[in-house]
Length: 105
Picture 1 (cartoon, rainbow, N blue to C red):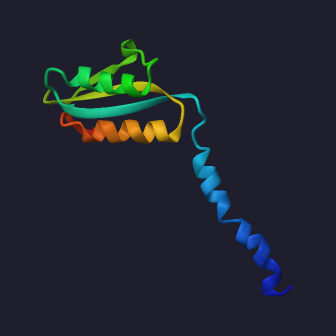
Picture 2 (cartoon, rainbow, N blue to C red):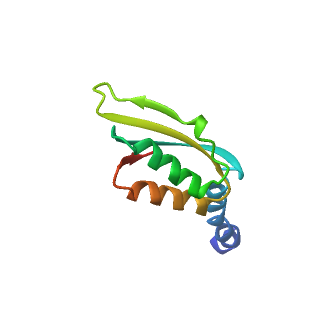
Picture 3 (cartoon, rainbow, N blue to C red):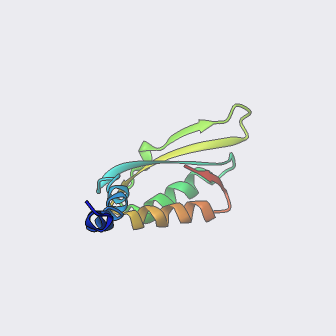
């Protein structure tokens, strides 16, 4: 077999990894996001308000909180209903740009 005989199958393969990467999350689905910041008044409220902006059905009663060992930081886990990659990207951008937020996972 000549190298040119394998070329057509090689040109169709690069699309496969991108397709798999796009399908890792099934939409809609419950998607947990951990947000960490300094333990200050208003932090949890700020995080839940942002979650509600991107997921109107967000239920704040599902929020999980975890203090750091020293009590200076707070981890807030929110679970949103992910409807698209664009929605998640926009929510991550909003969270990471908020002045009270240190880390988003």
